[in-house]
Image (cartoon, rainbow, N blue to C red; front, side, top):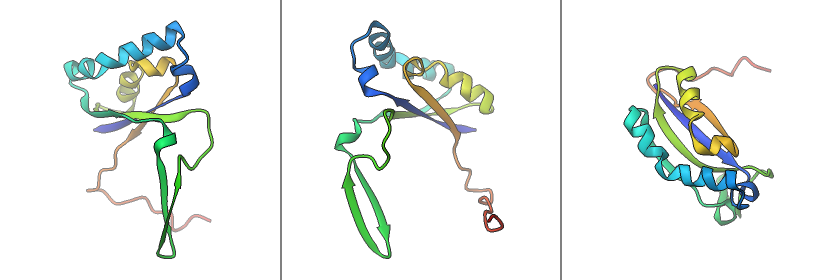
Length: 125
């Protein structure tokens, strides 16, 4: 099964120059190769900081866009890795090896299998 590992961190911490942050950044340069060697790697990318982003929405047929992220938080989505894993437990173990898990956190989420029916929320209040 495939899982998205969404990597979040506080840019002030990650780019603040501490030895721990510098070690995490250095570890990122080889982590994809480690995942490839173990057979878990599918894809991965780092994202630029959110100050260069745009948030887009369409309401009543009209599109609008604003600069930056929509939510206010210290942590930002900094990148993602898509992995293959046997189950969510193995995926979490693999995510824990990411160097940025020591500075921020990694959310592990199963990717949608479009061959199965979508969730049914029609009966909820």
